[in-house]
Image (cartoon, rainbow, N blue to C red):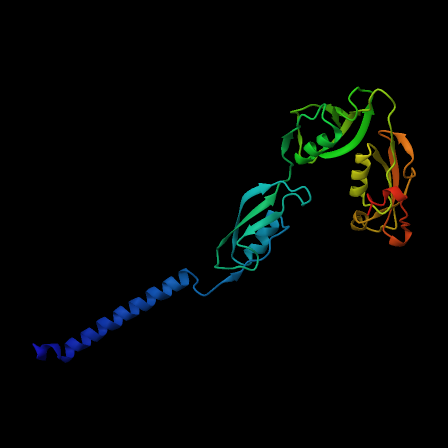
Amino acid sequence: MLKFIFNKSFLTHVAIAIAVVLLGVWILLKFIDGYTNNGQTITVPSLSGLTPSEIEDVLKDKNLRFEIIDSVYAEKAKKGVVLDQFPAADDMVKENRTIYVTVSKVIPPKIAIPDVVDMSQRLAIAKLQSYGLKIGRLDYTPSECLNCVVKLNIRGKEVRPNDLVSKGSVINLTLGRGTSDEKVLVPYLVNLSKQEAQSKLQESFLNMGAEIYEDCKTTSDSLSAKIYKQSQSANSAINMGYSIDVWFTCDPSKINYNPPADTLNSNP
């Protein structure tokens, strides 16, 4: 028996069998290693702000794929571009990995106008803004309900509660002025941004009229411009719904901030 086991021919066959097994294991490991791209990773590029066609060009060179899993409405974002992605930018992934992206909607969603008729101006504005709507002009009409919402319109066309409109639409309000010609005091608007001035005017039941921009070279500059002059002096009494023209500047040296004493606690 021992003589057979230690026979040269037998040992040769055993050695060959072991070698074949080891070779098979090595080939299998190499196949698995190649199939899974073991050790080969790719840095995920940032896709933020890109359109689907641009994404495809970027990922093609990196042997990556993408899939749109959601679309959401973002008012300030460009339409049809990436807002979010997974895996995130700079993460390490294997070839052929799918990158899941969320893009901004091209068309704003429709929403039903809430019922704000007969509500006070302040409550109505807060409710409309909570629905993603913007407030435009404030007009006044004789009504027993002072500063209550009488009706609403978009670009001059009356709209009613539950009418469907695009999110972000500008809603103009017609408010009751009471049974007499109510007057209000003009607020001090110097050194305010457009958004701050609009809010201040709405609180005073007034509208922003003409907007004149000076010393602003680009649209981006205009967004940061401040008011340096207004058509009606602060604290002058005018009818509700009157429009105040304002002049904006991008040159801080032109702003002479000198508010009346009784407005110091309400202006920056």
